[in-house]
Length: 117
Image 1 (cartoon, helix red, strand yellow):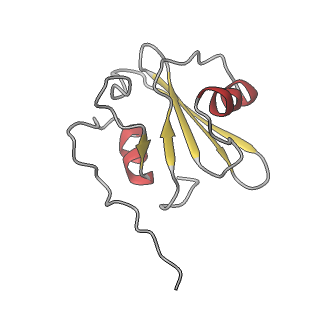
Image 2 (cartoon, rainbow, N blue to C red):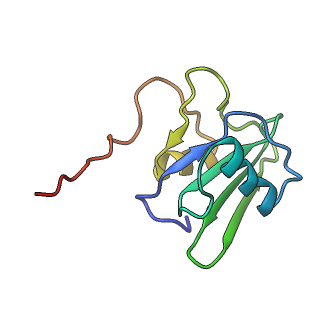
Image 3 (cartoon, one colour):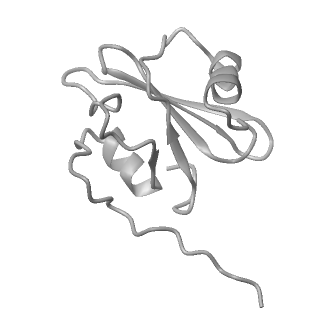
């Protein structure tokens, strides 16, 4: 992937019109998700049929957009009540490769917070 393993990934919890490009998706990040699209985090959007996915991220110099269309099958359902709203970079890689994100156990350990002393 083009981002590191420590990136924070946020999933938009509604079907997304894949005609939206950089600016439209950045607007969803800011106005609907309440997040800054220039934060360096990755924002994931899936269409209604779940056969297309877009990932929006800031690389430090501009907004980048990854777009994948499955020729057959569907991406995992990210809109049900138990679906995660954040993923690790590895979980995103698994999702993009077609793996299902099921169960209540996260694939990555919880983030550690370092307290200053």
